[in-house]
Amino acid sequence: MSPSAHARLRDDLRALLGARVHDRPEELLVYECDAMTYFKNRPLAVTFPESTAEVAAIVRTCIRHRVPFLPRGAGTGLSGGATPTRAAVLIETARMRQVLHIDLDNRFAVVQPGLVNILLTQAVAGSGFYYAPDPSSQMACTIGGNVAENAGGPHCLKHGMTAKHILGLTVVLPDAEVVELGGAMADPPGYDLVGLFVGSEGTLGIATEVVVRIEKQPQSVRTFLASYASMSDACASVTDIIARGVDPAALEILDRLTIEAVESSVYAAGYPREAEAVLLVEVDGLEAEVELAAREVTTICHERGALALEEAREEEERRRLWKGRKGAFGAMGRINTDLLVMDGVVPRHRLEWILEQVYRVREKYGVTLSNVFHAGDGNLHPNISYDGRDPEETQRVLAAGEEILRLCIEAGGVLSGEHGIGVEKRDFMPYLFDDVDLDLMRRVRDVWNPLGLCNPDKVLPTAKACVEARGRMLTLDSETPVPSATDVAKGEAQP
Ligand SMILES: Cc1cc2nc3c(=O)[nH]c(=O)nc-3n(C[C@H](O)[C@H](O)[C@H](O)COP(=O)(O)OP(=O)(O)OC[C@H]3O[C@@H](n4cnc5c(N)ncnc54)[C@H](O)[C@@H]3O)c2cc1C
Image (cartoon, rainbow, N blue to C red; front, side):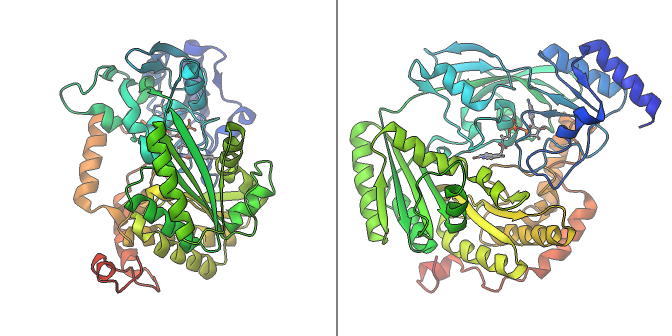
C-alpha cells in the first residue's frame, strides 16, 4: 500500500475512533503474530472498537479502501488465525469486554466478544453457575476467540466444546451488514447458522455479541493423579475408563519431559518426576454417580499398573493438581525460545500407536518434543521446543510437525481438535478433504465473504497447495503401518 493510501486509511479510521487506532511500528510489534510465533506479519493498523456499530463502521471503511481486515481477541491462538497475511487492519476486541446480561432462570448470559473466558465463570460463580468450556489459556483468551476456534479444554470431554455452549450471536458480516443468528431460545428453525459460524476462524465475519449457555456447578467433583512407568499403561487406562462406561469430566496425560518442565517452573504441582507419564482424571456430577465413577477409576488405574494414585482431598489440592496441567505450555518456555504446539486428533484406541510414532518422528528429526494432551478426546498436543532464530532447526521442526499430522490422518484422525487450521495447517487440508469437500467449503465462505477481505488466506488451501499436497500424499514414510480396524478386532495388532 502506498504511503498516501495508508495515510488516507488512517485518517478515515481516526475520524471514527480517534486515538483508538494504533499504527506506529512500536505499537504494532505485539500484533505481528499470535501464539504461533513462526508466522509473523505486522498489520497496517490496529483498531479498538467498543460497539457493534463501531465494528461495522471499521469494516465499511476497509471495504471502501479495499483493505483486508481481521478480528483479534487475545492473540493466544495457536494456528496463526489472528496474524495478518497481507497489509490489513486488525479489529481488536479488547475494549468489548462487558457481561451485558445474565439470566439465571433460563441459564444464559449475553457477553461482548472480548470478555476473557475465566471472567464469565467469575461473573456467575457466586450464584452456583459456571461457563463450561475451559481452554488452558482461559486466564487470557476471549469468548470471541473461543467461538471462532470452537475452543475446547480439559473438561470439554464430558461437557462439550464451545459449539455446544453458544446459543446466539450478533455478527458484523464481511459486507458490514449486522445480523442476529440464533438466540436464547433453544433450536430455532432454519439453517443452523450459529453452528456454521462457530469454528469459522474469523473468515465469516466478526462476532460482536455472544449468547452463551451457563451451567449449574456440579454437586460433587473428585480429582485423581495416577503415575505410570510407561506411556502405554497411561493410554490403556484411558481406553479402559471410557470402555467401562465411566463418563469422566477430564482425562489428561502429561509425559516425562512435560513433567520435568512443569516441576522446574512456577507451575510446579508435585507431579512425580520419576514417572514416564501421569494421568489426571476428574469425575463430576451427583454425589452417588461420582462415588461409583471414582471407584471404577481407582480399580482401572491399579489394574493398569499405576505406580501411585493420589486423590485431591480438598479444593486447594485440586487446584494444585490442575495448575501443572494448565501451566504446561507456559512451562515449555524453560526449554527453548519457541514452541510449536500441535493439535492432531486420533481415535482414542489409536493413542498408544500414535504416541509410538510421535516418539519415532522425534528421533528421526532430532527435535525436542514433549506431550501433554486431552487423552479422553484422542486430542494430542505434541509440543516441539526450538530456537526460531535457527533456520535449519526450524525447518526440521516444521517437517516433524507435518509428518505427525499426516500420521494422525492415516490413523483415522483429523488435523485439529481445537486450535483451528488458520494459516498453519491450511495447506495440509488436502490430506483430509478431497476437492469436492474443499470446493463446498470455499463456496460457503464466498457467500458470506464475497470480496475475500475478511481474514483472507486462512483455513482453505490455494489450488496450487492442493496439487502439491496431493503429490506429497504418495510419499509418507511411516515405518510402522497403521493397524487396520480388522487387525485390531482380530487381535493381530495392538490398538
Ligand atoms: C498456553 C495456551 C493454552 C491453550 N490451551 C487451549 C485449550 O486448552 N483449548 C483450546 O481450544 N485452545 C487452547 N489454546 C489456543 C487459544 O487459546 C484458543 O484458540 C482461543 O480460543 C483463542 O482465543 P483468543 O481470544 O486468543 O483469539 P485470537 O488468537 O485473538 O484469535 C483466534 C481466531 O479467532 C478469530 N476471532 C477473534 N475474535 C473474533 C470475533 N469476535 N469474531 C470472529 N472471529 C474472531 C481471529 O480472527 C482468529 O482467527 C491455548 C493457547 C495457549 C497460548
